[in-house]
Image (cartoon, rainbow, N blue to C red; front, side, top):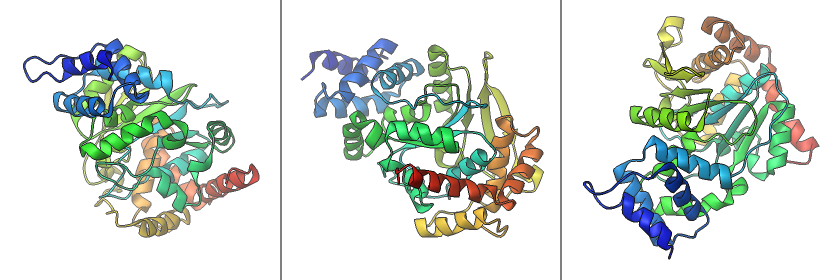
Length: 352
């Protein structure tokens, strides 16, 4: 048993009136001891559930990100005209609405903008479909690539994916603890803030609850994160909704987030969100979009999301132009060609 960890556990788990927040250094030390398994399984479980009940602070999450920087992987910087767009979404996946990020990423890559994603396998508490399985349905298995191969693929195809069970094995026993606890611990919030890339980047973080965005602002300010965007997206993802106003916050070095409120209705792209049923159905719908079938359930949502990101990342001058560019990329078969390029690259390099 770690006596040092025991003292940190006492600090966060003493109850409503006597518990206290950890300093940034203490939070970093606590997570490092959990990742290295210097804390016992009982201590880890107690800390995670106590921290969930008390709720983490932005300073604590900054410290936990410090621990990820110290012990976790990072994709090496690539040569790129644009900062790499890093998408951080809930690791427990999607279960209610159709995910769009793989298609959006293909559109951005077809336009020349590099995209890095990260995630793992199905995870508590939702056990929803993760990004990895969606890519596998498109013929891309990111789980087999080394970290160096991810970097090479990102540089040559504009797409990359960091698979945490392979690239960050220290985190996997904490995944087991999450499964046994049955509740999302602060680690689930931490993953939304994580940017596992060494070079110039633009981090996109999805969230559900407004306090998450507030914690993000504090954590990033302490860590000097100068370029990020928050998305109150579908199921906490970076997918913009079409049936309600999209709430977006963007930070580029000012004191406060610049707020964007966007409505798909203004560009005739509103509608009900497509419900997720199973992988096979999603694959059919995704392939229909790649083939330019306008009657696909995901077509309008793809234009809305890809158009926004093309505009927000500076590729298109306006939101309307971004939507038009996304449509052109799809119908000119450049998005489908980008997927084929990725598939051929993995085979040629012996990564597949």
